[in-house]
Length: 434
Image (tube, rainbow, N blue to C red; front, side, top):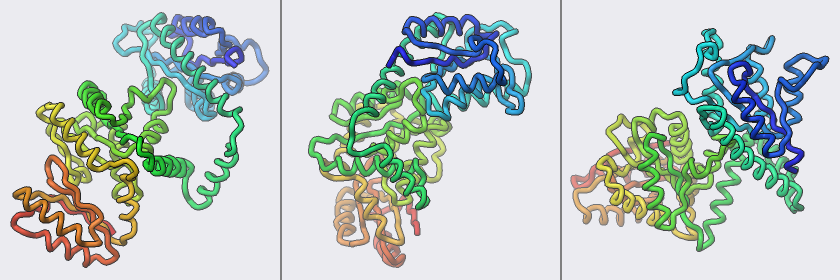
């Protein structure tokens, strides 16, 4: 199939002549076909129609962005490069994206001066970074090396997909589409339906005795080195780890890949720092985890780790966290590992608590601290005697125990809360949901 693949090169022209030629050279070495605006020749249609037609015929898009936005497409108010990219992206074609390193000196003529185009260029760069894992380059040689390697990986992925597509299967693609369409008729989006499928598969898989707990590590890139150390210690203890640098490939959709990782994970470890709380992607990952837990629809169990003094978001204040401000990674990792294994056992789905949690019209999360271990053990024994208590789990950090309640009548929950109001017990936080 490789010989039949066509690569479309999407970029501005005048400011990136050398870089475009470097990309073309990399494409030729891989013996692939290529297309871009300068090779179209005279055609009867409008320029934008010709561009988009060639994008549709191509298999892979290489998008190269410098400091110019380029000419605008009449009536569309976006550049030719962005229009080409949008056409390819909307058609589901792999898009490999590169941006010129901001620290590389650039001639003034190659820098956008139009204020409106500068705004459009910044917006487009932001969109590309949201959708894809973007690589940077410093010169044409640097770009050519990256393009050659990334195209080779993209080709492998396309050929693997083609092999899967042509392999006979009892479940046809049309069957899956039919199920998704039925979900849409019931008001369930296709994305949500796929998420349910993945979580269901994970739930069934937990019946295997050899399955390992899977942990999603949500963090800011500025905390990467510390997170890598924690990830290594988790793997050494036979725990599967999802971390972006190991899972994301150039051209992948960030949104889809991250949601896929969250769907298949048993735990999400959120590393709390000023950077992560201000990171768009970290906030999205945290929001998904909290929403799923508070709504009772299941999902990964949230285990926060505090890295520095921060102003915690309101929803995060009710969740017990592990304190890693002293940077004692060995100690913190051991506590984290113990917590994961205590809450996860082969054949036991950690989401079962959430499924049972749905049965009550009224719900509550309560975090407790105790004066002594004896008080905590005695209280837990008492709590587990009530059918309304779904979970009473010892934990680490700012609280000693997390209690989950569900009941059809609010007074049943209130009665249990009243029993907890004792001198030896401190109710740190309490969230009630109807």
